[in-house]
Length: 225
Ligand code: DC
Image (cartoon, rainbow, N blue to C red; front, side, top):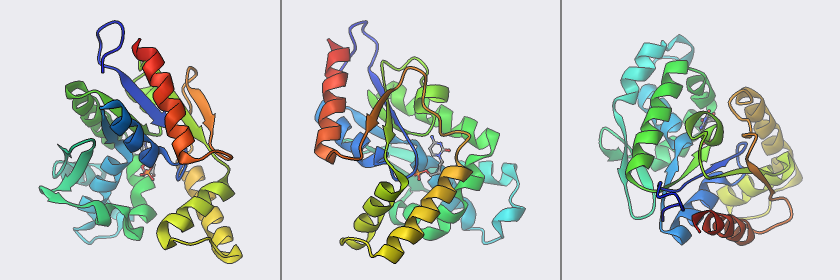
């Protein structure tokens, strides 16, 4: 898909943790025949690669994290880019608790952010892309033709996360623990998690994922014509 001025169309989808960015971005990319680029997977991949050395994260230097980043690549799949560490698939590892617990630390490192941003831009230059993360519409693609900011209340995001993990509705205790965990992640990531001034906000509280995806696809098709 190309935009009316002949430039490849980039769609950015940003929002807080568990707002459904990645699954939405993947489905939007599939529907539009574009490719999904998950910037969070790069932060997670670098964190997982660095964790393999086994030393405590509070002793990590930024240079040692950048050295680990050299082992992380994005390999084009059918509709998305798969993260790899040393050429090996790492999806389960990067989504695990050990990575989730320390990835915010890595995401605060300025040179790591520059590496992720450059990797996302290079990847997206070769393929029309739906890029998701926190700052895709601000730092990485300030000129993107379509910018989406997804919002959902912490309790709703927590509910979705438990359902995704367990396949059933959460108990009251699970919901409370997950909401607290998400609020603390929101706090840790708050600096880079900001909507672009020209982003379109989609409140996902009362709508299904199909509806969200349909709205974004329709907006992207408008931009194309
Ligand atoms: O969206 P996620 O949970 O996969 O993100 C993982 C971490 O990376 C989280 O700490 C936020 C951070 N991140 C970021 O700072 N900027 C991005 N563009 C994407 C993710």
